Length: 205
Image (cartoon, rainbow, N blue to C red):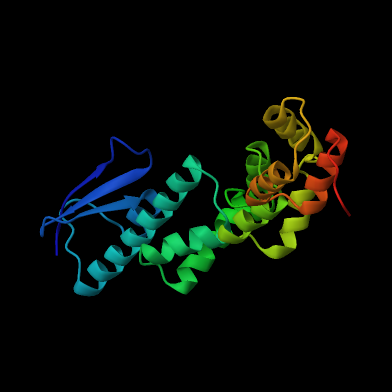
C-alpha cells in the first residue's frame, strides 16, 4: 500500500489527510504522521498499513468525542456508550475517558449539577431530577450534592397554584387534579401539601 498524497486538512487545524492508492483517505493527527514517518510516496507494509488504519480510527473517535463534548456536556457513561457504538474497545474507551476527565472535558459532578438545575428551572420536582440523573448515567454518589444546589421548590409551587387557581379556594376534585399534575412533574407530596396549605387549601394530614 502506497501513500499517494499527504496534506494538511483545510477544515481542521492539526489534522492531516493521507490518500492511499486504494482511494481510502485516512484522517490523522500530527503525532501519527511523525510516529509512522509518513510522506507522499511512502510504501507501507501490510502490518504498517493495518496499524496506521487502526490508529486513524482511534484518532477519528477521539475527534468525534471532542466535537460531541464541545456541543453539549455528557456524563462519562453516556460518552462510553457513544465510543462503543463507534467501535472503540474497552481499553480505548477507558483511556480516552480518563484523559478527557484529566483535561476537564468530562466532569460528572459538574454535569449532574447542570442537569438538576436545568430541569428544576423548567418546573420539575426532585423525583424528575433523579430520573434524569439516572437516565443519563450519573453515578448515584453525585446525586445528593447536585440536588442540594437546586433552589427550594416552594416559590415555583406557589407560583403554579396562584396561576391555576387565580385566588379561589379549590374543591376536593380540583385539589386532586392539581396534586396529580404536580406529582407527574416530579414534586414530592410533602412539598405539594405545604404549598397548598400556604395557599389556604384545606389539606388533611
